[in-house]
Amino acid sequence: MLVRPMTLVAEDERALCCLMRASLEQAGYNVLEVLDGEHALQVVRRLAAPVDLLLTDVMMPRMRGDVLVAWLRALYPLLRVLYVSRYLGKLTALERTGRLGDGYIAGSAGSIASIE
Image 1 (cartoon, rainbow, N blue to C red):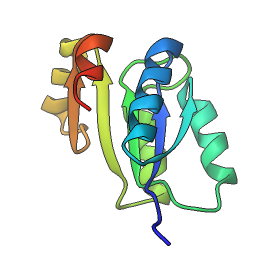
Image 2 (image 1 turned 135 degrees about the vertical axis):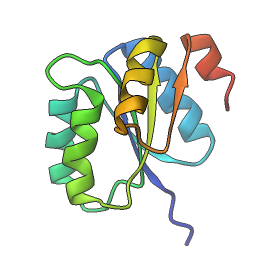
Image 3 (image 1 turned 90 degrees about the vertical axis):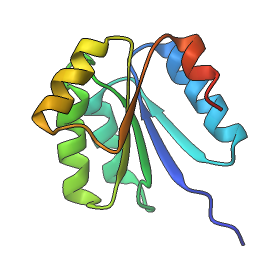
Image 4 (image 1 turned 120 degrees about the vertical axis):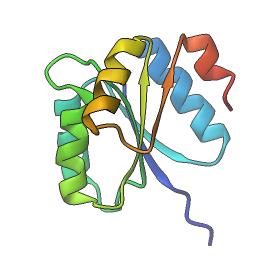
């Protein structure tokens, strides 16, 4: 039996969150979606399986993406992270401080959809 990777999408823009979920599911991933970092932590604490990949917005209400990553890496040290943001300045600031995960995508929802 093939085990599909567990992916958590944390994005406060509902339309973009749905778009990322649909693209990932089409590519064979199990996907959970949340609209903010606090909800992400609640969901992860109830999971039986580990999260393999986190796609997170940099700026979300109630908890920034880099803070969410710090919490989740305490649970899953090998967690792969992909930051998503329309605001390149926020990403470059994180990159300069060394707080970016494995990579990032900057751009509009249309450019993110074209990645699949």
